[in-house]
Length: 200
Image (cartoon, rainbow, N blue to C red; front, side):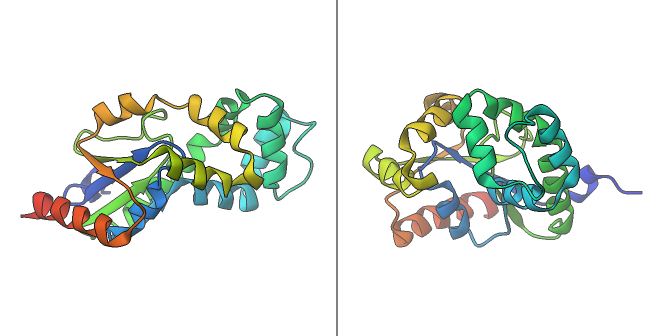
């Protein structure tokens, strides 16, 4: 029986990394390849995975009340102690990795896929041949993006960002750096150059 490594011999994995609010998901969509969006997968897991519910319920019985898990309940756990995010991540990480591997198998025939995973480095989800693209943008754009999230809980989101690997270190580990001005025309030009470099 063929293993996952056999499926992935010819498929290129492009990982999009950066700070919270830098526009990683926006850029990932511009590539035109299948995208594995870890945040969306986590939302699906909260809604449909009873095993994850049991794990979180056991660890945070005062906060996790019913199935499916509500985002507000998870937010309250993090608000209570921002370091709880690491505990939550550890509990759901095996399931996210499983879904990622399923995604990779499903798209093994594609020329490339894009991995939009905020904790790509932190959870050791990378492979040696991955092409890593760091998304950089101006602080004003980041603040604008963060204000639109989580009912404008800007302080909490910035604290969550501080728990991740420092942006300058992610940048050093990356193969390419894209300056994101949230204009699709400019981003697509950069992606076109990158594609030409990879496939030609």
